[in-house]
Amino acid sequence: MRLLRRLGGGWRSAFSALALVLALAVVASSCGDDDDDAAIEEETATEEEAEGTVEATEAEEPDGAEESIPTAEGTSEDGAESADFDEEAVAEFYSGKTVTMLVGFSAGGGFDTQARLMAEYLGQYIPGNPTVIVENMPGAASLVAWNHMYNTGPKDGTLIGYSEGGQLVQQLLGNPSVEFDAEQIQYLGAVVQDQFLLAATRASGHESFEEILPPQSEELVVGGIAAGSGSVDAPVIIQDVLDANINLVTGYDGLANIALAMESGEVEAFIVGLSSARAAYGEQFENDWNTLVSFTEEQVADLPDVPTILEFTEDQFGEQVITLGIIRPAQFVRPMVVAPEVPEDRVLALRAAIEQLLEDEDFLAAAEASGTDLDPLTGSELQSLIEDYFGMPEDVQARLQELIVSN
Image 1 (cartoon, helix red, strand yellow):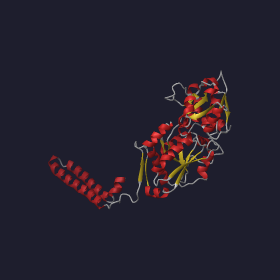
Image 2: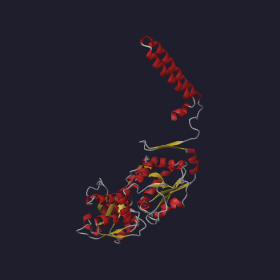
Image 3: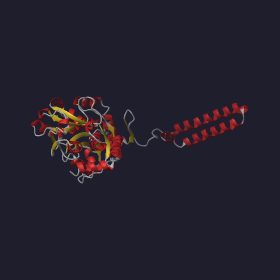
């Protein structure tokens, strides 16, 4: 269709000429061998006329007739996502403005660390080169930030949500405190798909996951934030499915504060994403903590001695509850989003900026130095992943609702 638009009205003449060629070829074939040479000569002449018509039409097109407004195309190298947008209009809007990345947790944790890393580089890829800053809005495992982004925050593309994706599950499960619609949110993408781990301090004496399961059933004091975060949802689920002996202490406003509570001995363990463990707590992760289990379907490549949670499940339903309640949400736990009202051009520009960010050598080097393992999703990939998740079996949904919303 783009080719036809470039040819303009002249394409009809060209196609009519080509149709005549085909008709003459049919007539020539029905007349026998004696007429072959004449038919070929006539066909050649007709083709030349058709080509001349197309060339004349292209020559008549004025410069810039292909597109009436400047556009930019956001495309990843592997062609994962492509979209045209009015770059000049987007640049005019963002020029001189400040874009805020809203993090639903306190400063110092994995979300905050990664948001600040992205903010340092992202502005140069947004048309107009706005300043990008980070604002922390902790509360209810980032549910406060989600509700703010959707309802009262700016709707013009100057506010990007970067908060706990598990709150999307809370909407599916009917949490009345959720004041947003996941199907209306516009997804920009994600730079990380995470993997949850259960990490305990070495000072606690816990060295294996089996210790907190029957028949040993040694108590493990676990710190958590609130429902909708892996720090709470995962312990509650394994308490039910595996009868794990966990004393869950909730109410912290971020993993950074739980990590401090672990240092003081207030709690012994927490659920942490692998990317956060490396980016925000690298020293503790390497020297002070024992990783008891990974909430993954397959073993984490560089943690060969850490078992996966599915090794301990005994039935298919329990496996589904753990997979859909803990493992799958980790894939979209760090989404970048904007409100439904943000104009499409700005959404496409922000998506393209994130894709360009992921090709920036300086950013990639900084991410590696910080311990952030990049595993990106485009905006459309992220949206599809969430839509698929929302189609979970009704019996699993009902069980998760009972466990992590009703309780």
